[in-house]
Length: 392
Image 1 (cartoon, rainbow, N blue to C red):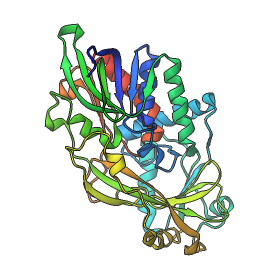
Image 2 (spheres, helix red, strand yellow):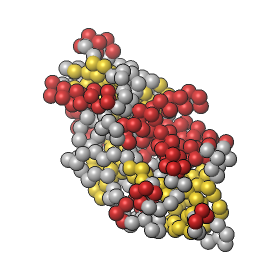
Image 3 (spheres, rainbow, N blue to C red):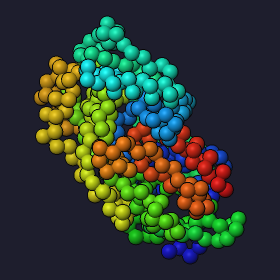
């Protein structure tokens, strides 16, 4: 260990899109902030392995963190992308279903309205045909606020703002442990960090933010004084994507009615206009709570099984019957940190845990940050900053 600790106002553990957004919010408020990331580059986990969709805020229980942060985050994200010239497109989204899906679509409309989304509307068959001629569905909703974003450009822009504010993001820096130090107003945190293969550094800070995504529970288990009851069990769920070869007729994103554990096998388009389907939901089981932070991403199997392509085709053909299964090929996959253990349990809300919950000054934990975490990232940054100010 280095002999003298490096003193900082704040340390954020995790440089995914949420950790970077938090680092931006803290550094722009005047705090000397360091964002540390165990992997060689920022955002190698959940942030770079999702659909890249800017969600409108349609699916989540009104009043939940997911609902409020998604709606607020969507507004902030569009503005940020425009001001920072981050590639994005507000394409709009169709949510389609057959007769048996009508109740699920009605639930979406009521949740959206109660969460402050006022522009979601039902389409007639004529409107649906005009917008997407090859989609076959009995019912359809249109969300004009949904869009897509280049996630890598977004993360670079967030990191740029952190650096402009005089703070830093460092990679290949693995959180090992944290313990409380000092007394009274000088009370803070001492962190041990492994840099590279074996170099170790000691940091001190007034505010410690655990935004480690897939490793958030592993980081929390190494924070001295944090009671086990405040560290939730995390289950991993894999989402596989299939790529569509050749051209396609779509101008909008197309989603089926949601399924337990996810939003169904939907069509998304990237910034280049290429089409992909997914994700499905493959439950991987309970994460080892004793694993070393930073070890999760390298240990996961991200390969997409070609045997699953038939299931993708069958699911998509419910609303795009002319799809030929041989046009699908394995794409990529991502892993979500779920606070539920299977699809039978109701989806859990995002957890922001501050001193009012766990009793430790200067500590903020984030758990279960999956979809719509990308959309909500800037709103989460605001919430963490507010939590830090009110608990100071």
